[in-house]
Image 1 (cartoon, rainbow, N blue to C red):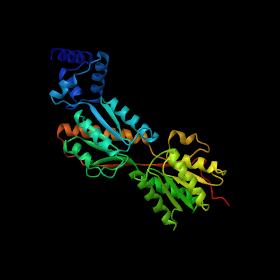
Image 2 (tube, rainbow, N blue to C red):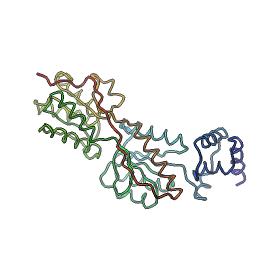
Image 3 (spheres, helix red, strand yellow):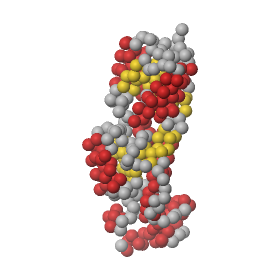
Image 4 (tube, one colour):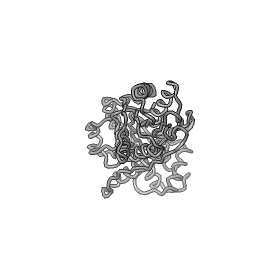
Length: 342
């Protein structure tokens, strides 16, 4: 113990504060002002101090580790989201264990066991499935949980997501205002809660004008190849269609390629709109009209909300009520949509 105590004293001296203040920052126990935390963390980095994980576990101190469970990180949306969350947590002294479940429920269960063994202080979850009972062990262990990009009813009282239904309404209204009535929808994955919410928004907005989607083509696998195949099929089978809604930017970009590969053009022959506003959306040809969800903002808000939840959990503050945060979305008009062809 002497080596650890001496190190803490060195940190306190370099940071110009007391040993007890350094302990509060290290253990995330009690209040520490942002200015004090910054000084202590700077001193820790300067001295290259790493407290023993075993010692932290023996005295019941926070692990300063967070679990992040995502369906996939090779999908651009989740890659950006993971980066935003990891950076936000790192800035506040947390390390992030990123778990890519490959949309496999068994993978989710195994990662949950690992996170319990690592004594994580909290978990951020985007589950790919409707069945979420296996997350109950995290809740029963008293681990703070934040749902992200979709709700986790019965497991997490807090969630941060884009307003998916509103995004669906924006896509449909944009095309309707351009004169389109024969509108097809292509996308994936069909079981995704955010995709289902976007579909609800699209169909509700179209119903206001007394119209329904000409066809809804949904795949289980969210890939360019699969949504390209679906777009090719709907173009061949439904010649009356004049506009295509991609439930994601990946789906919309696949639809643009399908249109062009059949010898037609966007937007002269078909208008195409997407959802996400990935970086690629502004560089595909033609540039993609899309609903922009603030991916990094969603990630940062989820990380901050989890930090507040952890602090309340550690201080025994049970007064806070859960919240479902829906981050506003906006339509970005570019070159892939235009008035209905004559």
